Image (cartoon, rainbow, N blue to C red; front, side):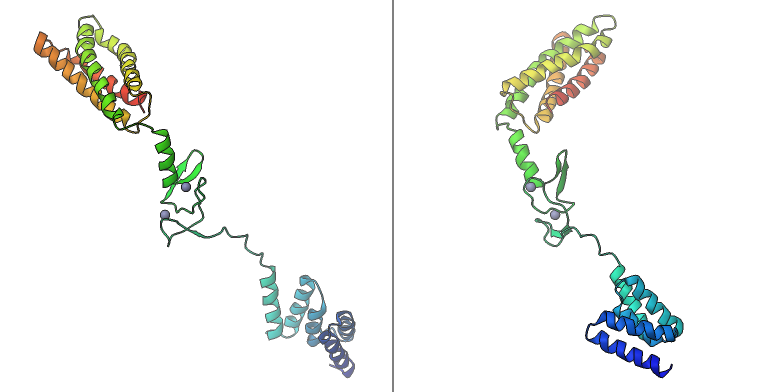
Length: 254
Ligand SMILES: [Zn+2]
Ligand SMILES: [Zn+2]
């Protein structure tokens, strides 16, 4: 490396140190015009060019000339870090309100409380916490304490009559069992409606269950009474009746 090139590089460094980039750049470029293989000039130039592409090209030239040059390697590594896109804004990490050690990104869309996957209930309107779901259900299921026994008693009473007479009457008709399929759903639906009216149309979460149990019990009592009093057991029509009766009650009162 000749004296002139050395001097240009020295002046370039001096200019770069005081922030005179343009001045520094002129010196380094002049040095490289005289000696394109002056690694120190490429290294100096890398510090005063603006674009990452230019910097990278400078570091690359240094490494071509001096493989393993630590400054150039560090410079390239630095450029790589700069160019890695910043990770997309990570969702805020929350901790479940019920499980303080469980991280989550979900919130209840009603009360905004953070909830983990275990605590989240997926509803048609989004994720909700169990407390909000329970609260809304309590609002929806407005049955009072006596509603369950009242609805059950009405169903039981009516089912005794229907269970005794409908299968018996139909068993006396040709193809009566077939008629059971058409007659039972509207009759059982009528009983469900009577039970509903008896409790002022209030909704109970388990009305469907207690009422259909009462319906089955009533039907069985009805057929037993019939058997004891008249001595007939229309088991086929009764079987069809009791299955359809229970399913109709549970569907209509859900
Ligand atoms: Zn909630
Ligand atoms: Zn939780």
